[in-house]
View 1: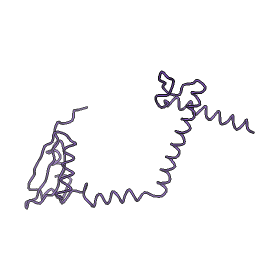
View 2: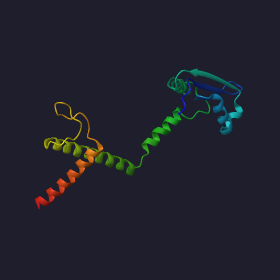
View 3: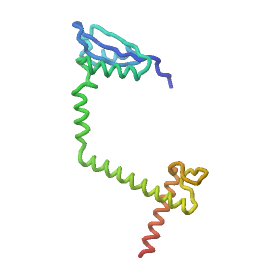
Length: 167
């Protein structure tokens, strides 16, 4: 895997009147400008470019977000007020069925975790380890996946035995 470049650029594209058209961030400005030229209809308006270099991508992303928020470039979409409003609207527009399925999944996961925890405690009473133990014998980590499968099998066998026995 190739190493990441050591510097990241934040660039600003201006038209002939000095109006800010676009703010972007890239490792390779020349390659990014070629992509803009091929993909963006507004590229023909670009008359000036300024490039500011940063030592980390994180600092460059902060500078880019601040520039978009404060300088209001004409053609940026991300990080603008309408974009944020659309993101919020999209998040709220989740269907009731999707919300229900999400909560069912979370409830099922929580129930499974409780059952495995109970089985782990039950296993420690029978002397069977359910997770890593420290010198005092108490559990120091969660059960492994294979231990959880074994615990599920024991739980199912125990449930079958309990049902047969109570009948």
